[in-house]
Image (spheres, rainbow, N blue to C red):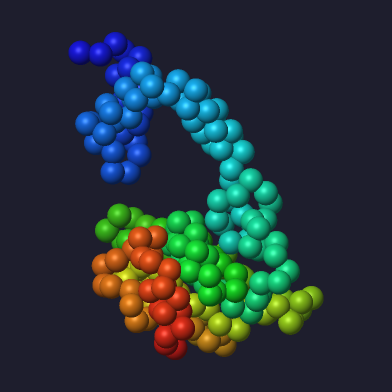
Length: 203
């Protein structure tokens, strides 16, 4: 029905979450008919981001720097480490505005049925962060807050990490009240997240 270039644009837009054929068609036609300048800006920004954005060497969230702004911030509490599944979870917690520690992003969760094991989500790197640093004993992580999503996979991931962390004499807690079973942190409001952190429980 459309020309090959328009079909290719619509097919490309469908890679975005929640975008089906009709939404992709609407977006493509809007950009081409009504907002050519926006389309060019979007294309340029996307190209720059793909080329320039990588992972923070400490927490693994998205950044164009060696260390992200949170890891580089000396005012953050190095003794608190919040473990989340995605960079989107970091953003959600930051928007709640109550947590002042550091993060570690797993980039997923344990899922044996999909062949995703501890090595695939960076558990070994996480454990290294929890081990004593003789050069900076004052920055030793004293509490790990497990903020994986309250799904079956998220709970299994939290349990596995808690068992590994306990062997390092680190306090392990889990965010609790207010986060519904099966929900995802990225879509939970800031007040609920703040309450979940203040009501976290030891594991």
